Image (cartoon, rainbow over all chains, first blue to last red; front, top):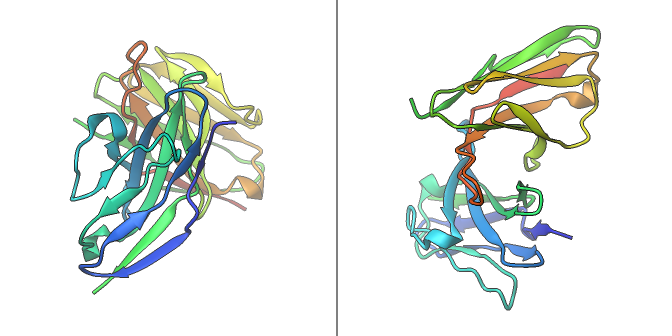
Length: 109
Length: 115
């Protein structure tokens, strides 16, 4: 079954600390994975996708097929990073975006 | 215009009412989506329209009726809803390129309360 797992509901760090939001997936074949972010009172938006290998707002994510993971990392968290983060994969069989349950990141000053 | 807009922002309706949610985009996208998002949960796909034709219905109850009158507009007609249907309803759109997954752009949502 295709599934995305985000084990942490809440992650709290202080400003300047490193951040890692965990994401594991279950998918037969080559997955395409994404991180979406939802800031308070703002719409859901794409943060990054694994095929583009970009760094957006200082965040990076590497696809590890051996560990079936796509963890989101940032070396130095900022207060404005506080938001809800969803890991997602696209199922090419069904053309659907499958979201994980989300991790709320709180960055304290 | 690079946004997906949704109206109304908030809607309160009784279980016997009929109402509609509206979604609009002018990015030339040919795929449009309805999602339902309960509090502190991820979005759940409800419907997908591709080139104005319904391509995916995720076994949604018939009290939800989607409509795509043209490539820019997507409606969700609501009738005889239940209190458990209260949620944030998100619309999204994407390019619908063949064989390639395109980024979905989300609207701000309509917060629906069924009383």
